[in-house]
Length: 517
Image (cartoon, rainbow, N blue to C red):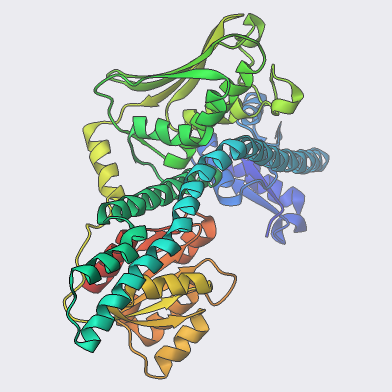
């Protein structure tokens, strides 16, 4: 494979370059390509196909060489192709500059990831508090359940004993049994306690989902229809507590705000970066009270999310530089200065922008602009993101094979599904394959994906070869459904994927959909 590519702006120049380079060109060490079409298109094609490989351009005129440099090649020279020294100079400089560029790009990626991790670190304290509250609710209510359940069990034992012995229950017996059951409380109290625990579990599930969205934003994510107020509230679940610790938070979402069509995770990352930057700004100056106001407006072209704060504002000299990489007016302990730069780049790639307005000494307003989608774009995005409707499982007792490495998950599957399905449990794909090979039959498979080996993807590949019909009825369960590895494993498959933590209703719907296949 070539370790350097030379573009030539004419066929004659390409032929002359090949002759001058000799064996280095014929052996494939250097690839000489004659530009067909525009130089811009040729450079873009090389970058798309070969990434960061060193790239030089040989032109017929100095003006063409300057244009090539402006387009981002590593080096360019106007050559007639006859001077070997000039060709070698072009090759050497393109290689050196290409290596430096590649190293710089790697450093930028590493620093950008560090900035993202720093932002995640800022989220942790608030997220810990938000998780602790529902966890405490669940813990407190679970602590009273043993006594309540034992009270109900004692009362039931008395009733069954009377039945088995053929005894009639008199008024005194009823009073005594009622006294045994009293610690259980009323049906309504039990229902309320269960509802509180379910609500707390849902809250934790939403927080985990929100944090996962921020952590796994990547370039391959497709655009989808996103409700903007819901997006803001989701992001505030991550960073809102940090804001509320030092400021009054105000919301003004306006009316008739359309959904936007954006990559959801990247949009969350932008809004999170802006809100974290706002929180840092508030800590730079004492003011009582601080205020943060989030405003949402839309016109025919754009949807605007404005975040205004009462921090120190941005000095006039810094307004033009605040989105430059590594430029920051914050203390060193509060970030690298990459968050706003990354956010603006992300917004511009989405067709929008990130702007700032400020009165120095009074505060700043950051404005996130997102293109308003056409009705056709919105409909297409909603169709892509539509999940299958819930279906009731077919009548009759069916068999479910559940595969998970966690014993507690297998026990949960047994308790949730065991009364309605014939359940087969396996701790990895190999055990599941052995069970199916030895005669066990299943109508649906629930398989964990994401383990280092012998996971749901391994099982699915075996099913495609040996039980093709059952392969279409696999429900995948993933800790991290949006990672590149998981998407690669599931590429081209239409099977349902559930993200942990999941609800019993979501599991039922997935099984019903699989049975419908």
